[in-house]
Image (cartoon, rainbow, N blue to C red; front, side, top):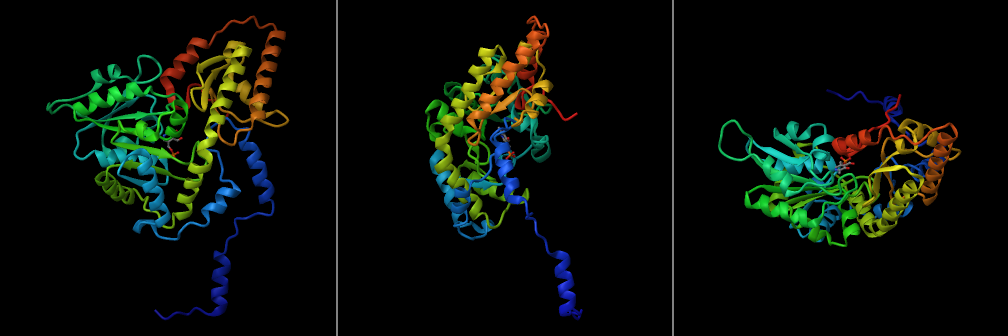
Length: 407
Ligand SMILES: Cc1ncc(COP(=O)(O)O)c(C=O)c1O
């Protein structure tokens, strides 16, 4: 067909297409957003890139990652070496990284994946294990209410040639899980027994950086018991996007195919990889401060008499305000009404590299005030909800119990 594009017509088309997402108030909006983030205990995924990170990132190479982008490949091989694995694969999200890993390991159904009943792969990835891999999931509650042990896992493993069953091919662990660390001796024991049975070990290590800081163990030691590990840059480390899946060369080559099939073959990823590299270099060393803030929050709450459902082993804790006669919704609403609001949601409190120490102090101050108001109103210290909240926490995992949803 002959083109009838005149200059005037092109100008009209271009006018339709043109787009400016920047607003006149954007710089001020971003400043406000940074302030909000520093007072947000909802998640560490709220962390945002810094000016320094952006300046480093923009110098990245400009290749196409479907054909091995150089800065991205450098990040992948660095993370592989750091974790003692042969190869790495940059992923847009932790969810894709976990799901591609499981899909890559699982070859021919029927099969099942055994995991903690609170695991992100099971509860928070849209049923992805069933959707992508057609696998049965065996969710297991830890008997000790903290972490899975081999004693929890062994009786739940499905094995044999009976046509009715879906044999367990993968044990998928998560550490940290709800901010708690699985003791390394338990990880090693699970891995040893699982491997003896020919079962593959996967780790959702979205926050494994925090485990290294909490335990002093190297990333290599932490990853040794696993065939594959997924690590996130966009949560505790504050990169805008990205995760890395590590494993054997053969596994990662296959995972690269599945990443493409899942629609995750990205193009000019250099600046994303560089952001992640910046986060590893400059933000990982900030994690001890984050853990100390979470501890300070826990100790402050305990001093007030607030219940702790799960203590601050790393960057998060779960609390129970019913111990001082206060409900979650009340806390959320009052925190949002402070002259400098604090944002939270339900029982989970997360600290991150951009959390202001002042926000922790202000939150403790609010809890003290709420308690005082209850006492003034005649509250006598009955603890109606404590058992219920603990039960909900233990059984509901990931988002950790009673969540205050928008009305
Ligand atoms: C433990 C864990 N694994 C995986 C993910 C998924 O990461 P993403 O949000 O990047 O998909 C999350 C998200 O917060 C997580 O907490």
